[in-house]
Amino acid sequence: MIYRFTCIVCPLGCSIEVEMEDGKVKEVRGCTCPRGEEWAIQEVTNPKRVVMSVVPVEGGALPTVSVKTAEPVPKEKIPELMKFLAKLRLKAPVKVGETVAEWEGIKIVATRGA
Amino acid sequence: MFPRIPMLSYDVVVVGGGPAGMAAAIRAKELGLNVLLLDENDYLGGILPQCIHPGFGLHYYKEELTGPEFASRLAKRLVELGVEYRTAARVLEIRNYSDLEKVVIFTSPSGAYQAWAKAVIYAAGARERHAFEIGIVGDRVSGIYTAGEAQTLMDIYGIMPGKEIVIVGSGDVGLIMARRFALEGAKVKAVVELMPYPGGLARNVMILRDFDIPLYLGHKVVEVRGKGRVERVKVVRVDENLNEIPGSEFWIEADTLIISAGLVPSVKKLKALGVEIDSATGGPVVNDRLETSVPGIFVAGNSLLINDLVDYVAEQGELAVEGAKEFIENGGIESRKWVKVEKGENVRLIVPHYLSGDRDVYLYLRVARPMEDVELRIPEIGKRMKLPVVKPAEMLRIKLKAGEIRKAEKLTVEVVKA
Picture 1 (tube, rainbow over the protein chains, first blue to last red):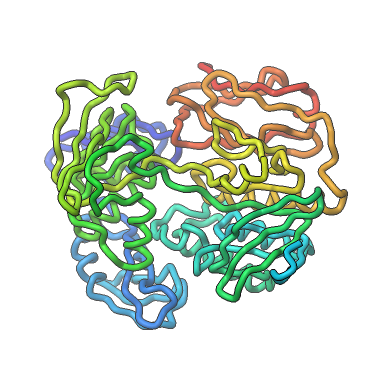
Picture 2 (picture 1 turned 135 degrees about the horizontal axis):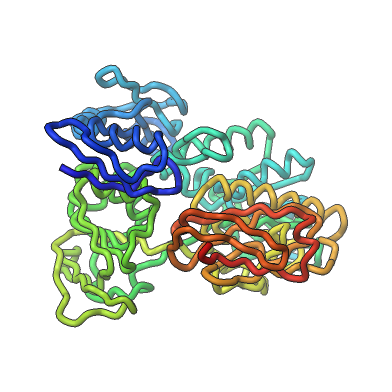
């Protein structure tokens, strides 16, 4: 199995190929630096993303508060996290940077005040 | 002049409370100027409060923030300094009586006002190109939004605009909205891009793979059909000259069409003032203080040119107000022999247009087409900079020293094979 993508670690945007065999990385091609190689391997073996959404808030100037995860979340768990966020309801006041909830040990942080 | 309209008086009036305007107002206050900031929204921040994704502030704050976080930092500083600002304030007109006499006429919930100022910073941002502008025809149905409208609905008001989405344009805004829709459970059926390459940054193109979203390169949406609401859109393939290929049409069923076909600097009120406009940027022609062709009218942010980083937008706001201070103190920006900046090979647009040579400047430029292993050259002063990759999607920012500029009569910037 060969995965192909454009590296996003820096603006160079190298075209990287990661060759996998039996669930293990066999070879990484096209990287011009070790950071890119590390990123490419993580991207294939355990991709993670910071997730953002909005949560309804009562009594704020705007009807929602924007939130993000304090750390990247494994990609395959994102739909589950989104379902958790869809049920959240907050009450003003909420401050920017405040932890408004926690999901499987990951903090959900407000990025907009209310 | 307007006897029945209450009169206010300032050194500087800043039009627009987004990142450029807020940075300008903050800097104005820090420089000891009497400043008023006006914004037509109910809240400060411009579009930032709805840009809930990360990627903001790496240069300006040296850390990665979301849009609302970036905006709230600026707003906090603004309040700490006691900058006077008004939201829900709509600017009707800017008049230029003389170099040091401008008036900004605006309405607000408490009535109409005339704000007199010695200089005006215009930071009103940009508008989005809409469906008619890109030649989409068909039924007048609901369910057609610009990407920014959809973003406002979802990320400010918490309303989903639709369930089955087709997005026109693969620039960063289109890709980021594709992710938002997919995350919130809508089905993104296609991103349709006219050009043969994606318009956005690589890290945003990756979104399509994350959510298995089909990308149609070299295609365009030409027609929308539906009764009352969007039901289907017609897509057609284009050749290398962007002409439609007959017989290549197909339909995609969708209830929502999102137009993300680029931004245009908002310059209507500048045009009314007689400001000279650059057809390449869509924004005004400016000198290295970001002063327009009308003395004392300065411009910053996406009204100047479409930026890809908010950091540059804030930087331009500060630069414009530093120019305004000099203008006020000297009764004008001293007329001098301006060094003209010209576009050479593979340079689509460049700002500022005129350099004084008495200060270091940043040139902001975009190339016309992607190239690898290139050199940015300014032959008149023998400047050469190696660049591994250039793309139209990424704005380049180049610093020039005052001493370098002074050596030349004009400067031609070109991006050529190394």
